[in-house]
Image 1 (spheres, rainbow, N blue to C red):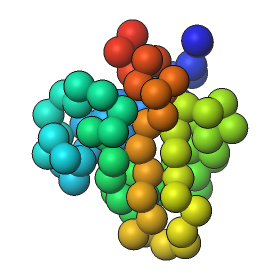
Image 2: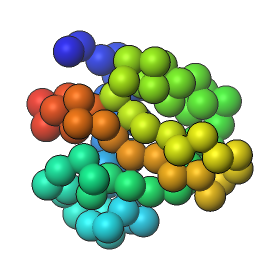
Image 3: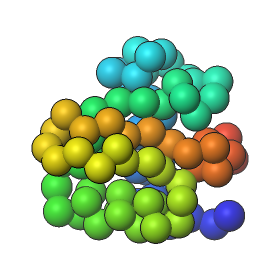
Image 4: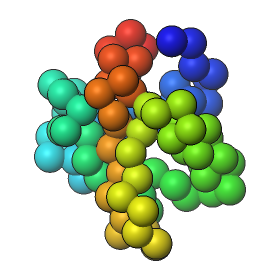
Length: 84
């Protein structure tokens, strides 16, 4: 699957976030990319990019409001991450 430059950057930002179970190291599966939305969605542009990834089923958002919501890559999103 092709992603834009901004989408690729967001996918990497999620995967390498320091609050994941891997503490910023390269994850081995999509469950290891779980982090807080406040670390990932910081600007209006980030929100738009994240939403586009969510619509493409590349990221998961737990639906909670605020910066403490959980986000991660989906299995499909992790496949894309591995190609970046």
